[in-house]
Length: 106
Image (cartoon, rainbow, N blue to C red; front, side, top):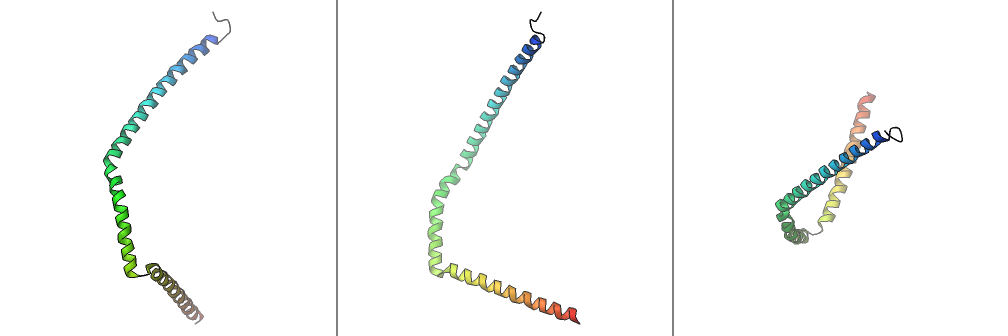
């Protein structure tokens, strides 16, 4: 017989929750170990790319620098091209709007 009514039920519920909590901890631990194993597999599979990048990036930088040196002020040429395209676009739009107004006026 319980000294406090309902205390036995609470103790049973507490034990059940503790068991459930321990099961959840074990499942979480297992899932984290599986994630760590998979991360290791991925790292081994793509590890060559990291070492290749360490060598490829400087080589690409040298080649690009040589290319820009040969073409001479590539950024300035690109900037000029963008400005010319924007100006052409504005002229074309104004021509089209003037043409549309003259067509709608007739």
